[in-house]
Picture (cartoon, rainbow, N blue to C red):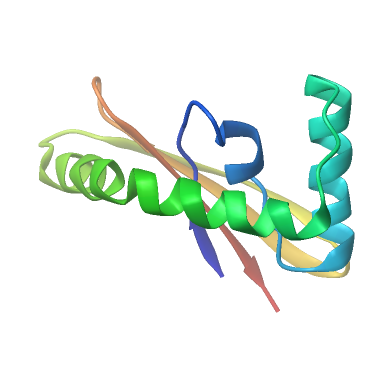
Length: 106
C-alpha cells in the first residue's frame, strides 16, 4: 500500500493516518482527542482521510511532477517493523519540493 502525506487545514491530522482498520481508526480518534480535545467517531477518520486525499490530489500530482522533472534530487528512507511487516517511509526532495511515500511489505 502506498500513501502520500501532505498538509491540509481541516483534515491535516487525520489525513496522515491510514484509517483502514478499527484499531487504526481508534488510534486516529485517540490522537484527535489528545491534540484537539475533540471526540471523533471511528467512521469519521476514514471520511476525513478520503476528503484530505481528494482535496490534495492536484497539489500532490504537481509536486510529484516537479520532483520527477528536477535535475537534482535527494532520496532517503527509514524502515521499521509493525505487526510483523516491514514498513518504509520514503522522502524524495528538491530544494523546493518534498514528497513523502509510505509502504509496507507483506
